[in-house]
Length: 280
Image (cartoon, rainbow, N blue to C red; front, side):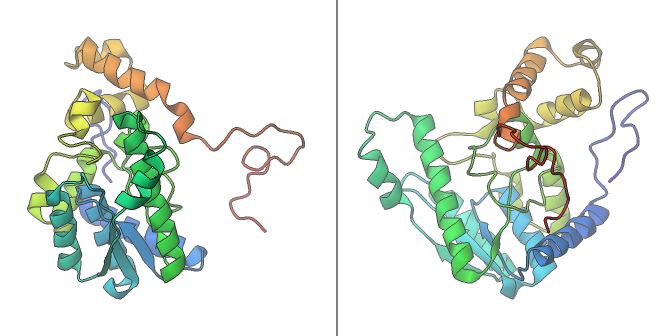
């Protein structure tokens, strides 16, 4: 990646060295799966660019015969999402499964008929992970994550759902960087250029939910994470409303990016005092 300043006195550029990034992430996937004793991967295919990029990287790392793409529609899922997921599956030539989660989700919601759209969306997201982890056991294949850095920083994901897979090649790539990598890898244009959506509610889009475009959010987040104050970012052309939107989400979702809080009763608390990179 290119770590030079985007312009004089500014934060580092978000422009990727896509060839180097590809090589790094392919090596990362090979190493992390081998470390865990897996030779296959299973990926939830949403029809969006993030899952497509993860699938392209996994195929390069493991071979198409060792990647399983899973479509997990609910009855309100858009037909376009299903078609785009299949387009990626076909382009890669990987084994695929389609698991309709409608009966499982509605089987719970029948007891919670007043659940609002957010609750329903969270239930769908978590049910998809139940299916993905079960198929992981079926195929002896490790689930691969698809969440990007922008979503993680803004808390725009369902806790214990989108963030559940143990290996994620995209977690340190902003959304605009995922788009760059997608172009480089040859992800179908229709998938790259579509409006990002979680497809949990009809007509929903990421940027509509967030109240800001990914392009603007990424620039603001990049500045904030490199120590630029609101005043400095305003001087670089960002408005108060944009800065408030991003700051409120960033500061209000730290809990989603941390392991569970454990009451410490010893000097060897896992993840607190006990910080070995590998358990023995």
